[in-house]
Image (cartoon, rainbow, N blue to C red; front, side, top):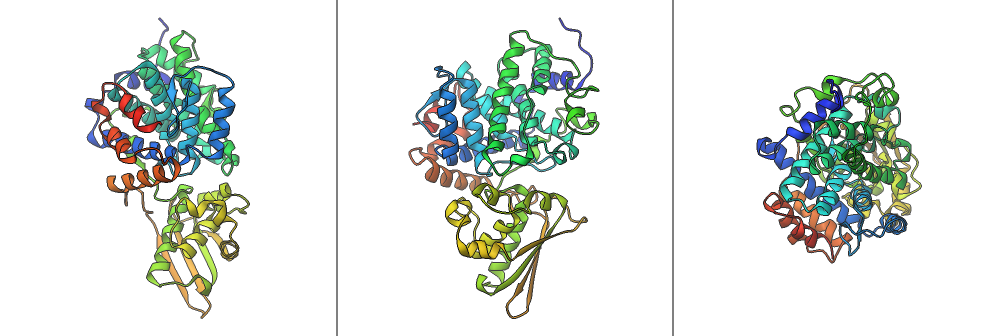
Length: 448
């Protein structure tokens, strides 16, 4: 047996093998149910998008195995490829969950790795949920230990930290002991990648899919006996220092099992970058309160912190750009009075009226504003100024989406993205998952 020293990987491994669903606080269990419901819904919304179809066709050329379903379709693939495709589908619309302290979207890389492996190995719904919590907490903890410098350097934190969560979840599912789970996490450190520069493109989604597949691969390699350095995460030449500043070990490993980052997961009412949501809320409020006619708008000024400007002050040339554009989010909220999937489609992105209003939007920085807040000022043709500030966006912990909101979002995404799927049946299967002896009902509900 490998000699174990107290490192990040061994601490996370000890947590991963000992954590128990029945010992989790109800807030953590409910976060898992809600996160899975939201993540599957967003995957259904993108299941037949061109990016997902292309990925599926490409990956099918590598394998004839049929371990696991593709959400919303009638095809099956090997478990690694299914995890990849489903994670991409869940992340594609920028409609997935967010752990706000790190801006990690944990469900796409973690849940879909666990789902594919659990289906392949014939495991129960309770085992899937338990592993999902372990993986979600692991991804958020690793991310917290390198934030904010990691993201600021250009690493796409959902992908780079999601691989650790996927590895922990898969290690738990296949019953690895603490030593092998530690090696799985160490192997995952060498399989971690993803770039912020690719955010407006399918390159970003590919790294999320790769995090799911690579996390599973890391667990399977550890199961087969492959090893990694015990300080692969925090060592002098390890992952954290290579990808950022000196890691905060306490944030990664302190109070594991008693302080829950995964319980802070939040859900999006709009399919756009999370820091854009306060901009949308402020514009919707102004439009409603003042019965605002977009034709009367002369200028729009959006103020936020450095992260909002860094992510969202961009030229819009594609629908992908629009999802992370301050200018587009403000324009569609003011013109259409909503910001749903349609408002980020090519038909709206390239609409002349929307483009003209985007051109009237300018952005300014206020270093005192917190992440996730925004202030919007509108100058009208008559010279009047309208002002709104949102410090807590809808969907945040302070203004959470309800279970009913998430179910409505799920049904809408299923109806538009996977119309052959019975949304009510799928929702019921997810809520009842912890009582399921296997995943057959869930698989039947989510695939044709």
